[in-house]
Length: 335
Length: 266
Image (cartoon, rainbow over all chains, first blue to last red):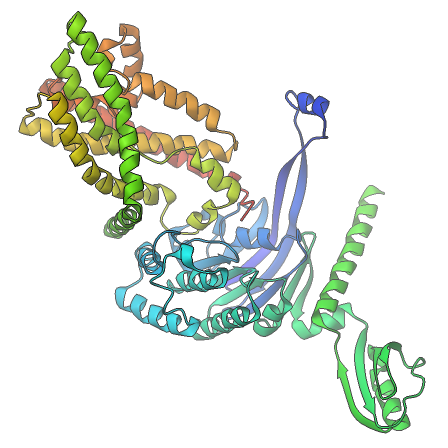
């Protein structure tokens, strides 16, 4: 049975609209205008226990709205979601005890008190057994290297330190589903890596399912084998990270280094860069084998590598395709 | 139920620690609160001294009334409903909504916890006021016991009323205007400004239909001996009734309010 099962989930926001100027301001006293914005347009997907899935999309794509519906913060306007067998919008205590929503750059701990006090309060709220609490706390404190931080007031912690203790506090009750919304935003590379490693260790240890949104592709590639790409409220792609390139890019990159002089490569593909001894080519996927063979046959090759384009480029391409599809849909609706 | 009691105990402990962090701020806040009753006390004592008792209140009764007032005011302090605007607009409320214990319980427990610090700080101030104004207070055991229950019920009623007003912020983020009206009505109709017996009859009758006096005047009158035994128990029953009505209203309103939350800003 999937941990998360989403069928036709929708969310529509009613947004007030008003032209600028005093006249319009006066008119709005008597007549208010609104526009309905469909942020999530009937999405379907599911997550199995223990699965870590990257949830990708540009700003305003509907990822955070979806996460908030799945965590019970937002009431959906259509469709159905089941998380651990619960309907999130009912916000049952047992459901809230078993899920966690961690938002980067957000503080949920008491600002003025030492972290340890907030952890103790959380223990009571989540009814965590004392010995389990102590064991988990010790283990997580060590994994995240926050031993010295737990006795400090939250207000004295840096952003990265705060994020580490936020994650520690959220995971103490051992949630079975984690919704991570930009958990590493604003953090330096070392801190990002530490948090990624901690989340991966937690998921492996507890079998928790993780749905992760992040604009840092390093988070996604390090943690998730599967990605869901959402764009303007629709799901564009749901599958393996590796399959994302196949689906959205028609080419691969070949990097070649030779001992002699490289000749003209124009006929083999798009030349991204070239100097006397090395070059990078963008080659259509179905021609990769032939081009590689030609390069090996015609040159004294020292090194040759074939790679998918960088994941950031693939995602950008996917969003561009999504934009085009949305424009087509809008045109069809108008006709 | 035992688990909820554990949460209340933890929240109260946490609230005490939080207040202790800023003990001087709490103390000066308390001094600020005391200016209001001292002004009322001085004014009404002067009126009673020159014109005689009004509505059964003479110098001694006014003195006792406003000295007990200071304790009752500390006891029924609760969350400012205007805070909801900010919590909702900033999305800060999302953190609290993700916890398995409802915000109502957590806030009720937190403000109950704050009182232990405030009352600890209130003792020397109350002693000072008593030395200056010399109230005539000699409550019976029954009055003392009922007062203890009544100040907590008064807190529950006032907290619930303010919580209910705070929920209006789910419909409009400019609920402050409505809140000001209710707070103004409370000032006049609760016995906070002046005992209701001093007000015109129609005001007293109007106040009888509203919850305000059960948070202020009723506990004070119990302790200073203005009520007979029957009035004491009728009052206690009325407090329970108002508590039930307001909690019921919160449960119903919350169900609709939470569906309107857009979690913007978080």
